Length: 446
Image (cartoon, rainbow, N blue to C red; front, side, top):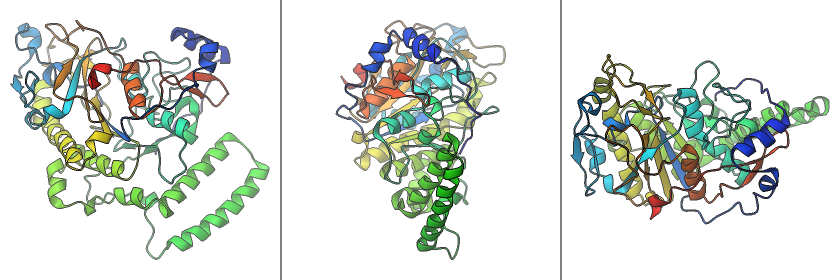
């Protein structure tokens, strides 16, 4: 699991009043925001496919073949099985399942840096909370899995969220990958091993040779006794958090059979593993499906290590030769597999990066950071596939229809899981916050 530095909080009034005011909420609104925290869910689970580094939307989902030569790029759009929806020629497998997904082409926000964009998209906010910087801390907004766990709780031997197969880091790590100001008790599991590795396994979920469940239970009782004595001497939030994590690991080792077995990819038929692709992209998405089957509500699959899609140089060669083939294979296999298993109707799949790429091609045949417009893909859980929602201008530079923001993406995720975005959460210092301030992207379900 990833670690975060010791928290440094700002004054209570700054976060409680200042950030709330920026969202258009007074304290009275926040205190009453939890009146209805549960809705009828569309989805049991969410798979968030995150293309870290920000993929080129105009070379994947929103091509402009009639645009100016300096911006339109080298790739051609192709028809899909969905009439009127065209995508890149280098996504041929996804073109065959386009009736199962919708593309939002008018996503937007105002801060084209990886650190801040990652924070926005992985938590559903449109601006940084006070005290948050470009590195992970306990001032950050909680990720979706952490928000879900806070509202629903989680004592069934399974985490509310798993992030895999990399922890997106630069020093201490990017914001948006943990519970932030809610505290470590609500952090998701971080898996930092390649599922395509023949030796892939999680040591914390693997019993040593000769060790039985009964022996582990006995050791657990002994450790619990020691912990009780230690708590008499030192009672702190950090100690309680450490004990909570040990308890969770024990529960998942001894009781969480389905969760533990989900990581045993060798149980999958070879043909299925081949279908997803014998690469990190494909096997991460296969593992995501297995975790959903095991009852994990939110799984985030990072498509590559930190900033893998950051194509400042040789954008077209990198996409064509390295990035798009495994992505196309893995994501199309995931959508098909979920559908064939009857899981797509109850699983919301979201695919995006932290922003898009510049309309103009630079001197290195690359595209630079651009957050004014980009695309996100949605499937399952009632999403009406085969459609494009919103539109960008002739250079894929700005929205020409309503812009949809990270907070709107977050509201869509939370409401799909049956959680009202207006739900109130309380941080470790007792300060109230509205979980999300966005609006559901309603055309997805129209």
